[in-house]
Length: 280
Ligand code: SAM
Image 1: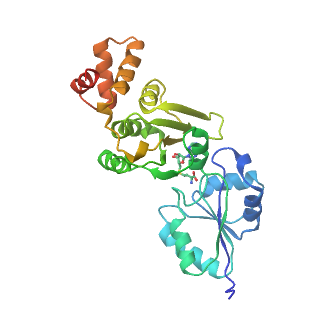
Image 2: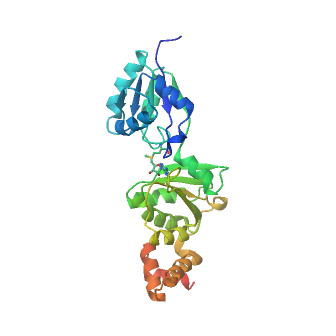
Image 3: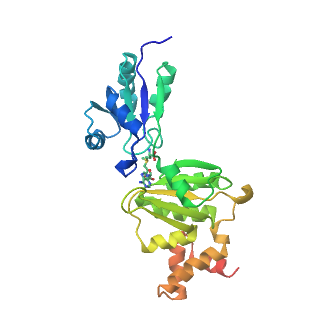
């Protein structure tokens, strides 16, 4: 029975290039009674660009629980609400999940206006297997929790997709190297933007590349899955990876000893462990 409720529209917005908005997203944003946005100033810019004038209400991580009641009330009164996040698909590492769940419980129609999401955009351009994949979003910020999560994932055969902030990319890649060993990886940076770039290579190669090029902008990390579900030996045991890193520093003019010291520092292990894994 039609209860006369409005609809919650989950509207995907561009992850950089404004041309990536869909015709349908533009129509829904124009027709909605209200746009609920993670950051109203940012969404106002998008709406201005699209020449859409619409009331905006904030819906972000800090007010999502209290704001949900108001939004549900308005939906029950027949208003149509478009939910958008700062970029990409709402509810993917962005607010939305709880609101969707409450609406479903309350019998309010929910529908999606598909479009960009950084995770899948990065996956398809990574060159790694797209047959089966697992989206992990952001890893925990604390190192011991991050290492624990990575260890839990180390036997995962599907391609892994992670989001990461630029200031944590280096430490996260080092942790991945330590736990996953020498896997193939892709760093998809600033997708759809002016400085779009995809760095592809093994984890040790990308770790050493970022030593010389400080990471800037937004990144998605794609890592190949474990082969045959076997947990890989930790990086310490993979001689070629350590050798590559030491060699990289030697090429940059460091002595063998200095290069080993630097590699140990990058990998968060002792110089003796570097020496041992080179001589095993
Ligand atoms: N809801 C968004 C989506 O559907 O992709 C994700 C939001 S999450 C808060 C932001 C993270 O997405 C960034 O830290 C980065 O990892 C990734 N990201 C967003 N835009 C990106 C872009 N243009 N290029 C690469 N990564 C991007």
